[in-house]
Length: 210
Image (tube, rainbow, N blue to C red; front, side):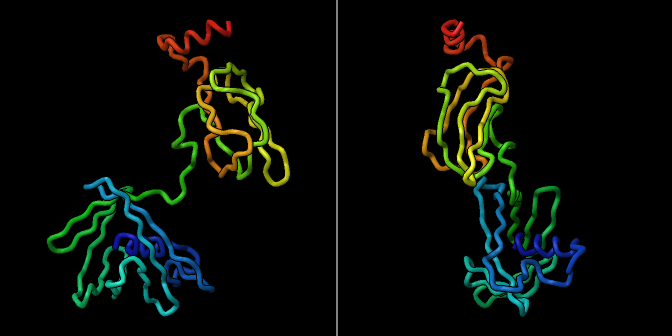
């Protein structure tokens, strides 16, 4: 119910075609998807829904639920012949869904996440879909900023991935011929100022290359 109420809240703030239902399409399309984390269980919940031209709502994962009314702060639905009413409120990324005897707190999962926001510091990410055609380094190699590490083929062009800083290749996540998606981690460079001098393996490596 949080997904439908959130969609209604989004439409209420719309500045273009605000009279159309959320998710409405001129041509038949796939279901809209919203994801939440149940704060109580820390489990992720995925909700699929689709508005039809007559205003009815299709919930393919909840066939026993027939939606009667949706607003930004209230959802009324018929569940197996019994009508229920949920109230929905929000604070930041938290969504609170309540009905008599039941209270659920959810946290929105962003629909679009910047891969760099969840990658380890120093990670080099695939900038586009493609394949690895050549690799010039191995884990443990010391590199300098701007040094070519590997080459990708994408859109019939060759693209060079270079080191972002002076440091050590602590992780090499790909191999030649591997197919990539946008945001896949290619390698991790641990910059010199991040190297832990108390780490024996790093100290030994520096002695060997020194």
